[in-house]
Image (cartoon, rainbow, N blue to C red; front, side, top):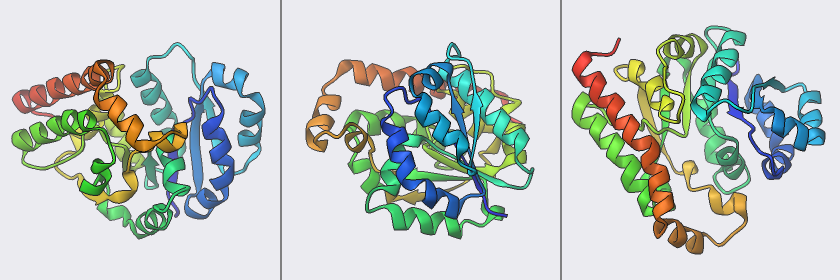
Length: 257
């Protein structure tokens, strides 16, 4: 059985939809199905793009309410995908903008190879950013998210990216994890990992390089410098990193089954 891929499409600008059209055929060669979620605002503002997506046999689209906070939206979307997929099917949870960058850049062959080589018995697996991938990101991104990774390593003895960008796991494992998720913010992605942490594996990849310059079509060095010097951007990273640290600390005290 081929795996399925799962990603939200909260793109009111249409840019990611434009990219998706160009690599949808590639996804069909790798994955049995692509689960996506669409908010009512996106359905209204990108009606033609949504109609194209829903006409493609590969895609299975769920419409979720606009008013849901990001963590609640992800939780409901992931639950719908996990309930629909066969229990033993591997689901690749990822993000549309990173996927677009990976498949439309020099990283495409490596992504194809890693997805095809993945043994379902080696899941759950976090594809983690390599040193080369992190070098492309702003330094405040790296330092703040690595603080969460290092804290988890100190507490639990294994090095996992709790602020993951790409997670592969069986539908049955995702169902079990979601039953324990309570947070409505982005820290919920760390909650998914906590019950898996003892059996979760990791693989560092270069193809998780920083996607924003490609998506925004701007100079990478200029954008990187601007983000590194932005207090608002640093606060944005802290807004999910601090709750993640609290989740890790609580799990280390109370145990996490």
